[in-house]
Length: 227
Image (cartoon, rainbow, N blue to C red; front, side, top):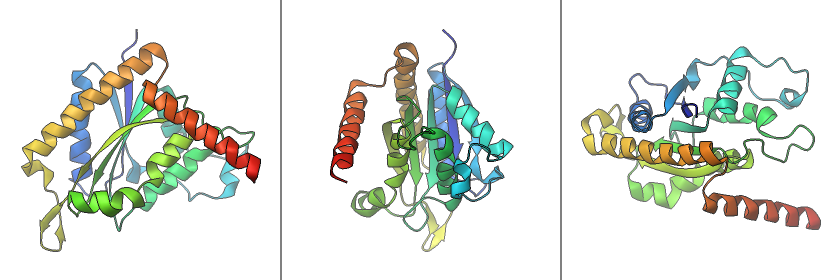
């Protein structure tokens, strides 16, 4: 069996950045499990803003977008690492997700995902503590896992790194001084790689994700009957 491939999309813009450092640790955990990792820094991509024209069959998609599409298509699992800015993800990540809709949804109805249960994991970093994540930011960033699930992916999990502040009112690179955070991200990478390994071998996501997908589709079908 070929080595499992994991794609990593990093939305951080600072250098160094907390989301990038956590992604590096996560990748270490993946490679320790035998995975090969390919990484993309989203801010370096040259992409036009999404319009409905992007769904045209003859739309001239940029090479950078086609590269990401090819990477996600041929990987066995993927990861998105992003900061949280003003309660949501950076605009360049949201634009990439919108652009991926031209490939992540079927051409006929734009309502059926094409990822076939492919596992994905999310890494978030933000300036607030864990309580703020639970109480608010998890909700305001929920469009990210929901959209990727709508594209047919299986949401395996996430990690959130809070209090990414170098001082009062000062954002900065802090996770390099938090060995426990790095260790946790690495361990989650190893666990994710195990899920990806199973998916690569069987072609099926974990049972709970199969059930979740069926429930989502059932709900969509019920809505269509009443609308």
